[in-house]
Image (cartoon, rainbow, N blue to C red):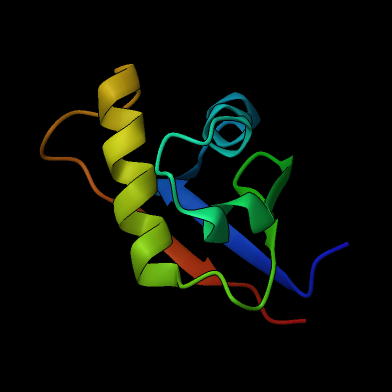
Length: 83
């Protein structure tokens, strides 16, 4: 559906689809750019070309912390998957 596949991991493990879905289904950032994300599997999002990875990482970490999915000091690894 979207042009890019994005890998999202936490502590070397794929983030659960439930977490990704929760982020993607909630427009908490008031930033329409994140509307162009679609979770497809554990650790995998499809995203539009205009979704900036650094801002996506920051927004996801913030949301996951607020939901209690990750600790304050934890970081996500987000990268574009190559074909």
